[in-house]
Image (tube, rainbow, N blue to C red; front, side, top):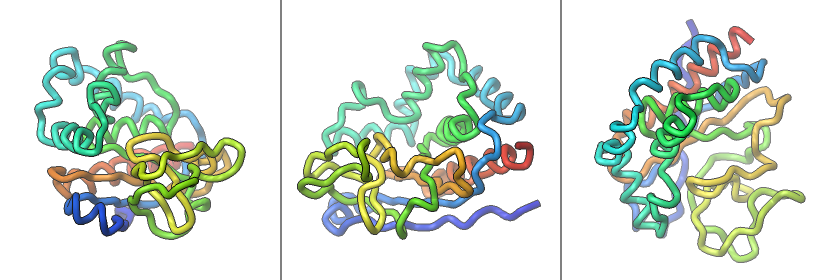
Length: 221
């Protein structure tokens, strides 16, 4: 059995670290699944989780510690969590609308599993297209999300996840099209952003659960 991947710590721009001392970026790398189809075991786990995320749970989860921490942070940075849902609440709402957690492929299923099990969201980048460590900072004037024709303009001051070269994702939002995993990607960089009030154990667990689920997909792809 392979050992767990190393969890790497990112950086936070000084002005943000002063305002949010517990803001944290972390990531692991994992082999990309060989097939887009999620393994049966992963689909079965999502089916079991759907039974836990019924209507009553969707209404009360916002009072749980980790979802409440993300809701508080959203408000602090000017996001209305009742309009732009926190990731775990968005997943729970999807379950209510769709009547369950439908499989959307190995990667998407692994990301969904991680946030449902821990409350901590995980996103994926094509590791070969990332330049150096990840961090959180404010977007500069005239900055764009990634590069190329699909790179959207970013409002100056918008909080973003960035590598050494440019913004790779809007904080709690879209990943740059030029950094999304390609079908031919060999390795993925799975990253999360933890906010004040989120225990370190949940952060590691989210990343490792996602990597483990992808490992099953790789092994059976």
